[in-house]
Amino acid sequence: MPVRRGHVAPQNTFLDTIIRKFEGQSRKFIIANARVENCAIIFCNDGFCGMCGYTRAEIMQKSCTCEFLYGPHTKKMAIAQMAQALLGSEERKVEIAFYRKDGRTTGCYRSHAWFPDRARQH
Image: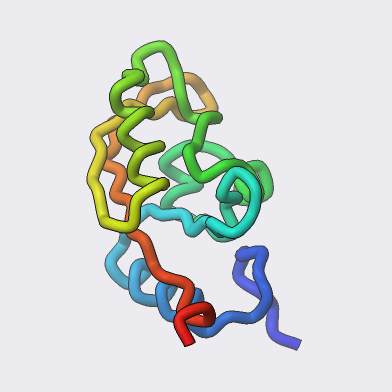
């Protein structure tokens, strides 16, 4: 049986396609499930883990708003923009200060992309 690569979701070729596409671009990213409470993270790549200093196990199932990365210089306006992007159905880029597990800051441009649930469209 093949080993799953760290995402907590039933086998889904759509997710696998997204993961392959973005990993090939050397991006740091997470994928969340908007159908569950707190829009839980169902996948994070190695780049994201390296950026924030947390292991995949520590990140999985946390809210996609990434409150665990907020710190004293994370602006409330950026947090509000991220929350608004999650409610909408359009891509939005937000500049936000995240904090690594060791407390160091890491500036980040966070892009929210919405993918419609293709199963519900039919």
